[in-house]
Length: 189
Image 1 (cartoon, rainbow, N blue to C red):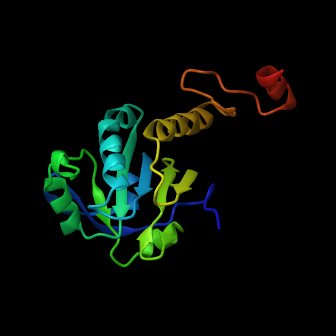
Image 2 (tube, rainbow, N blue to C red):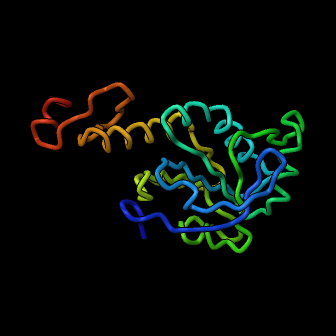
């Protein structure tokens, strides 16, 4: 069942970042935009490409007031080991956002991304009120496009701030469109 337009499922767990383990919950992100993403497992194949891509784009997310949090069914200790493994050795190295554990799989289940023993590749954009504005879920072999996640975040923010809609292929800086037939005519007419 889709959670789009509904309050994001609450969670509390442990996370790892910069060699530290700490408590994290959805409440930590109240009043902020959150890009919550799920991935299958640490020390696998497509996952490190995604985690590094999110890390390299983190400043773009921060520029617009968004935080990133990655989640898998691994422990925080496995996350730390993976972050201590250099990228040249297929690790993820230092990341500039936290990775959360979901050992009991309750977070993955609440966001409906479980696929057998691991999670599908799910991305959820959650607004400052804790409402899910976007979700995309890919099967294990298909990595995500971080630029598209950013575009969707920008569009979600634009809609919230301006009360307009964002048509297909909308990009940051465009005006958006009226939510009317006249608006449609202006875009495709």
